[in-house]
Image (cartoon, rainbow, N blue to C red; front, side):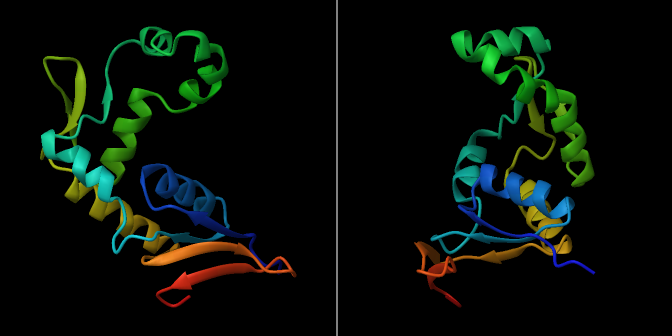
Amino acid sequence: MTEPFRVTVVGGGPAGLAAAEVLSAAGCAVQVLDTMPSFGRKFLMAGRGGLNITHSEPHEALESRYGAAAPCLHAALSEWTTQDIRHWMDGLGQESFVGSSGRVFPVVMKASPLLRAWLARLRSQGVTLRPRTHWLGWDAQGALLVAGAEG
């Protein structure tokens, strides 16, 4: 049996957690490092006002908001649609609704239940979450250098 590809994600915000989720689902052994004592802190801050996750507008309208960058982002935006995001939330046990503004919110109107469910999914997929850990680079042999908790 082959060893799984080992990946270290630096940063435990939404982008880092999403990368960890995709990589671990693909069979990689993933660890996420964050200098903060907990993960998704800015995600929680964004959720103070109800956590607008995405917008329900038609895909073409959403894509047009990116102006000159839209052609470069077309493939990525097409692969992760509003419906995909809502389905992902449902998979975490967090229902969503479309508000009168067209924005999509979790029914509970808080970020913390969604983040807790997301972190639980990551742990169940075998992702190692390492808070209070700083990435320092690599040593001469190419091994990862970290400092902090368990580092």
